[in-house]
Length: 154
Image (cartoon, rainbow, N blue to C red; front, side, top):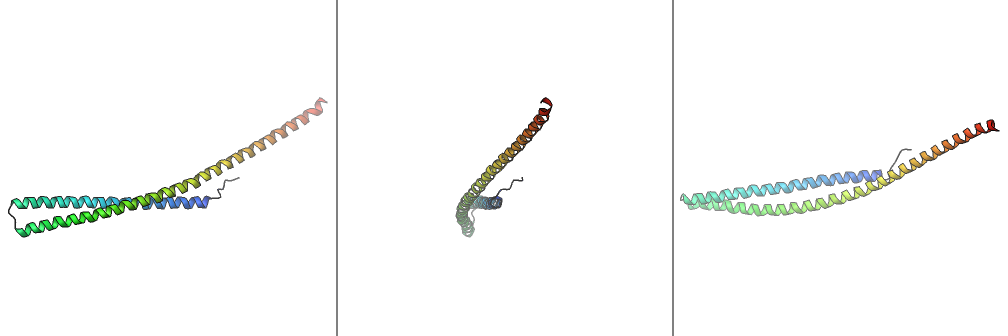
């Protein structure tokens, strides 16, 4: 008899749900990493701007040039602050997606354990059925052998 798990469709849906949650988690982590990389790029640009401002001040630049450099550095500082907000939102999204993935994993694992128990029970039933069949064959053979020996010995 072939094993058939009654909750196989539920297990399939749980596997699919877990895979989708894993995909969403990977996307959220990728977005978080992109935000972190953007922050690093902006910080490097701000440092470069500050270095240019320091170098330009020793060359007696015009007030307009210094104001432009200061504006650029201030603008980069604002963008870094905005990127920090994006990183915080991305981190929260990753935590949320991780929790959803963990839940989907546990739900799939629970149904999978039920499947394993059902499969073990099915195997035990098949083993018992095989034993009963082998016992009945052995008993029949014993009876037949005894029956054929009994008339000769009488």
